[in-house]
Image 1 (cartoon, rainbow, N blue to C red):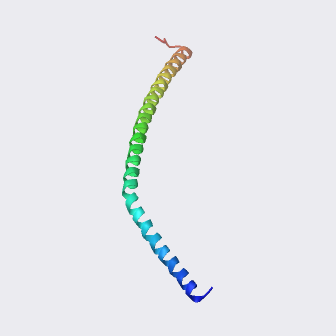
Image 2: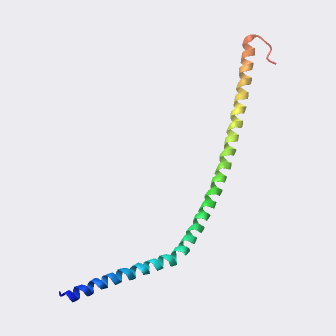
Image 3: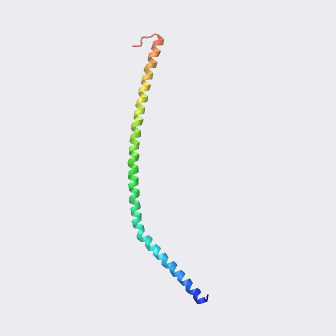
Length: 96
């Protein structure tokens, strides 16, 4: 290989590198706004769906929690009545 061929190869590589860089930057600028807008739209839709599901789940859990609370209160009240009757029966007082 002579010096002339070596010099020409070096220039071709540099020109290809610069051209590829500019083409890559141009494509990134061209596709970037569209992709970013679509990504934001998709993320917003996913957030809204997740928020709705979380709200529904919280409502269901709240209703179930209220049901458990009411059942526990009834059980405690029933137990208190049984204890009162038992205490009255064993103390000799009239349980009416």
